[in-house]
Length: 134
Image 1 (cartoon, rainbow, N blue to C red):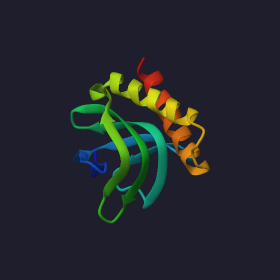
Image 2 (image 1 turned 90 degrees about the horizontal axis):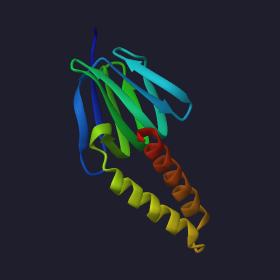
Image 3 (image 1 turned 45 degrees about the vertical axis):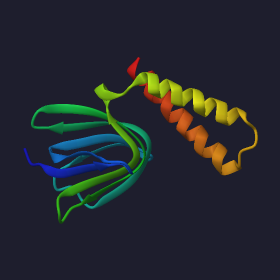
């Protein structure tokens, strides 16, 4: 099967880099799967599990607040996101602590409209992440 180069980066680190057969995720417009030699493509995601099929099987990641692009000429994809982690490496204690922090922040009452919308989106994404792994 044909492959393409995929990189997943957060502000802190490169989470994944390698040759893959496909990546599937939930974009804001719906479920998306990208294979090698896909047409030029760009989309965003708020929260999504990622299923990356490579030579060693399928690996699951979780990503939040990202932008995905595929370059047909280079046959490569890039996912830039604020958070991405392998599904089997997630610390649910940390995730639950973050959920508690978000809930407390939203309860403060002195936030701007932008802060409320952002934190509500984060809270929804974290709740989906916790629900998806229990």
